[in-house]
View 1 (spheres, rainbow, N blue to C red):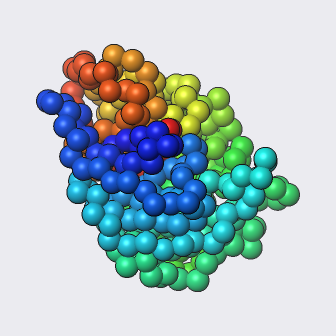
View 2: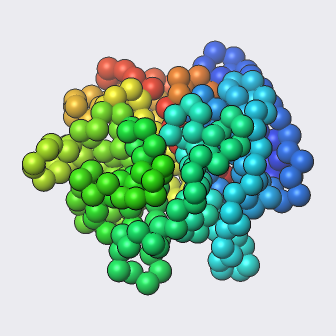
View 3: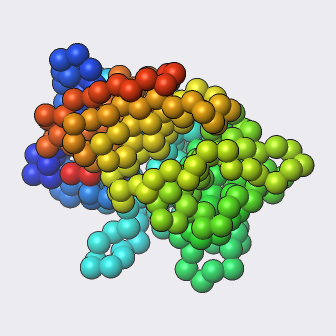
Length: 301
């Protein structure tokens, strides 16, 4: 999947192999195009952001629009620009959004709010005056993983009740930025300071243990991390995509491209790869070491 230039304002889904055909393409009528730092959320649907806080949900690979709704207004940060929204799918039909410290929980197919908004400040997850929060989906229905930039705790929040489930919290390594729970609740991926990625094993009654990494560093706003199956994980960065398994630390499959690219998102079955408009000439090259494939992501115009 790729976002073309800001002036073009188009979203495309393309094949990654064979003729690399464009499978679908749509334009945007937004008054304000998406920020270059703005995430997309991708599952079997894709959710895009425009006009600061307008969410458009489309099917894949057709890009047919199924819902459109607005979130809470994001706060304004440096240079008068709005802070990018965070968003992610919990399953095929549910989406969370984060505007500043306000978390909202949506039915992705009809734009209906599924619970009252949650203000993360009210949960008292940190003593910092101005914390930066990162949210990612959790494999347990209705839950999200919440981290505070620079603190080692991964909190687990129930979006249906607005409360933290402290029994599911876990302490990872120092310098934690964001946590990505895998489908198998025994494993979690972590983004740490310096743009490094690690995989951690969580065993009941034992401290969390790092089993893969650190890998990186990641290119700021130009990488994708995502989940494959129960314990699989992919890391797209620079000119390559690496497929890893938390329960098999020696496993790795790599796709190498001809040049660096700004990764955006990948579909669940990985039929459409992230790509920028200028990456047209790049071609994947496979390097074997067993094999693998889902994703959240970032945009780069």
